[in-house]
Length: 438
Image (cartoon, rainbow, N blue to C red; front, top):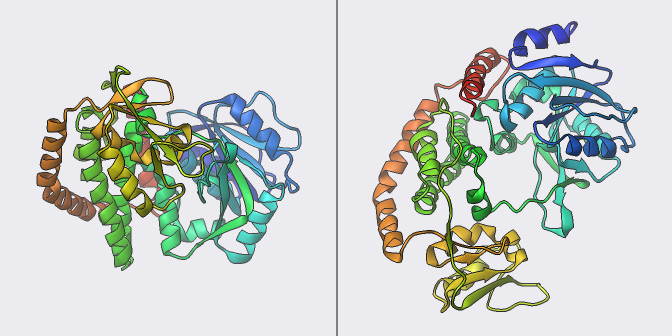
């Protein structure tokens, strides 16, 4: 197979991706799914051309660049069906493996090297350790670190892929990085390396911005969060890592509770998470969203929300960083404050966007677009929903436990041994998506 890698890849994966051009020249592959912006891809390639070590090939899956720096060697594939982010990274990783690469790097199209020795350092560290290596990822505009993520220039040696398996592409969109990274951490197979840096484009990705989106991307993200936790519970139990299993069980349970509390009025999100993902159903397609956020008029007195360290703080001041306990008192103060709507600063929206769902249950909130949004629920309806959620908690626990038992029967994780079956299941799913134009 290694002697004829293109033939193998086309026979095994040719119903998902179509080979266009290119030839393997090096032992390192950088996989970049390119489903959206050609401009972002071309900017990424220009930055990548400045690396001090260029003995790598780039596998592009999706849209093709119009211009390529001549220093770079590209292998180009078209998507036959929409692969989603999980599919782009997972199928790309599989392609690179069967094309014979010794080291595989995954990267978002909008995650670009800062360190000019990034590829060299990742390669040398992975070679000497035999482990996956994730560089430190930072965001634009001096915002906080977004962590260490496999899809932002994480590298995996071939030996690790052989032993450990591939990204779980059947999630389709979202949480494939969480699943893969958590399993690597459990097995002690990953190094977080802060000596080299990657820049990832900054997005405000909070409750309101996601509810304003009209497509189905957010629904898939919410479903995949739940699915990944259930899969990780099963993995942890199979490998006798019961502390990890308890952690992921709690995460799945809290995800169900929070979804029920914060999305009860958004049935197009609630049902896919509670009725599908929580029952380990990965067969259904998600439609574009139909529910909308409720807008309110700007009347009355605002309650200002800010974060410590801002040049001008007023109203209720929350702690910066990841210290959740430090924000308990400010949150209580905000929830019981005298005012008609919340008026947060831009920094609050970025750093404390995780608090928006709870804040909106109390009163409307003025968002960065200048509009005021409300949960659309009265205080009596909020109270009734909380009571109903408490009543449903035993059902959530039971459903997650049953889904974990079902997960034991899945061909998970994806390895060389079960790859063919998983590719067939994934092909059936994405073929359905294309037929239904989802």
